[in-house]
Every structure is written in structure tokens, then in C-alpha cells.
Amino acid sequence: MERIHARAENMVVIGGCIFVIVSVLTGFSMAGGHMHSLFHPSEVVTIGGAALGGLIIMSPTKVLKDLAKGMVQLVKGSPFNKAMYMDLFRVLNGLGRIIRRDGLLALESHISTPKDSAVFQAAPKILGNHHVSEFICSSLALIVDGRAEAAQLHGLMEEEIKVLEREHHAASNALAKVADALPGFGIVAAVLGIVVTMGEIGGPVEEIGHKVGAALVGTFLGILLSYGFFAPMAARMEVLGELELVFFRVIAGAVVSVSEGASPNDVISRACRSIGTECRPTQAELAAIYSEK
Image (cartoon, rainbow, N blue to C red; front, side, top):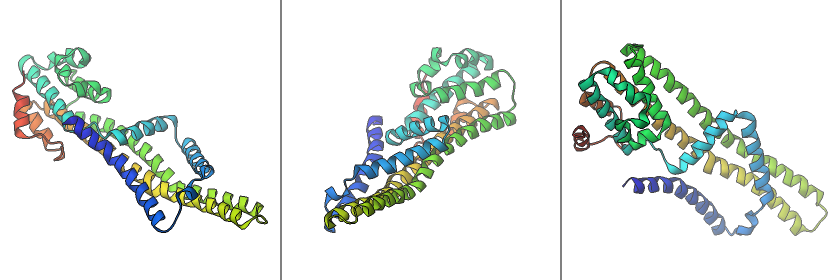
């Protein structure tokens, strides 16, 4: 089921891109247009190169790396799905049982080296995500070390989440600004095409028409890439970032519940209230987690 869901996520983005292209080209053909008249690599080089250059100029290296990761994630879909939440609850249930049986100090060996912990090994999705496992362990370490009360604990974790939020916004904002700039770059390509046309103004009418058409294709590509691809991708990146923030805030709420002495079942029950309906486990699924040893 998980693989089917991942493939469906892949097809959402890929299918949407294909739908945009097919719709535009079909309408163009229905109006009597010829596909070969849209093929002008020089326009693609001008617009694409200018957009990439502008992105490099305005974005620090960290933003560029986050943007590259975000673009990959756009196709793969969010890893913070129901299976990820189920693994999170396995970790919370396992650690909660240890606390009730052996006390808070017994967590130290689990959160210091999660790769060697049987609790984390039973939740491969959590263990495989370095940021998530590190956030869980560092937050629980504050409780084990007695360095923060429940109120302080929430504030400290929220500060860390806000840093993550700023990084998400920086990457998606960079992509959104590229989308905003693309129509302008399309105009630049069109103007350059007209300049070339003016140099051939005394030539055959067919040649002049071909060059004017190439110039107009530049404007067309800039607008299409902006509103048909880059702006929707920036919006989707924002949505995926929000899903990650929700996941981290669920962890933060669960850790606060642990610090307040709540039982494992109560910790998980409280956490479920903050989860969207698509990812929220059923009572039967929660019961299966509670019964795990």
C-alpha cells in the first residue's frame, strides 16, 4: 500500500505537468498551429539561463541546496505520511514503556545512540530520517538531564521548529521569485528576437516571419513556465514544508506530554489530535501499537 501511495504521489506532479503541456499544445494545434514553429532552442537557453543565473545571484548556497532537495521531494511526495506517524507512535510507545518501568534515566542509552536502540530499530522510518530522530533525542535529553520544565521545553522546541520553517520558506520563496521573473525573462528573449529580426528587415518575408515567431515564442515560454510550472511547484513545496512542520510539532507536543508524566497511551492519544485525517491512525491501528512489546 505504501508503494502504491508513493507512486500515486509521483504521478500527481508528473501527470499535472503532462496535462499542462498536452492542453497547451492541443489548443495550439486546434487553432491551426504547427508544433515545429514552437521549437526554438535559443529562446529556451536565454530564458532558462537568465532564470538560473538570477536564482544563483539571490540565493545563498544553503538555500540552493534546500531548493534542490525540495525539487526532488516534489516528485517523491512527502515522507511524513501515515506510515511515518505509525513509526513515531511505535517510538513513543516503546520509550514510554521504558520510562514507566525503569524511570527517565533509562532513556539515556536509547537517545544517546538511537541506532543501537531496539525501540528506534523497530521504527525504520524514524531512524532513517536524521533530522527527526535527532529532534526526538535532543528534546528528550532535555527532560532526562532535568534542564527544562514543561513550559520551557515547549518554547525551546518551538524555536527549533521556527528555524526549520524559515529554511522552508527561504527555498520556496526563491522558487516563487523565479516564477515571478520568468515572464520578464520571456520579454527579454522576445526583445532580443526582435533585434535579430530588425537586422534582417530587408530579407525574405518568410525569414522575417520566422524570426518574429521565434521572438513571440520567448514571451510564450516565459509565461507558460511561470504560471504552468514554477508557481505551482513553489506552492506545492510550501504544502510539503507545512506537512513536515506539523510532524515536528506533533513530536514537540508528545515530548511535553512525556515531561508531564502522561502514560504512553495518553501521549499518543494527545498527539493524534494534531494530525490531519489522512494520516491519523484508526483505533485498531493504535491498539496494535499498544500491544507491541
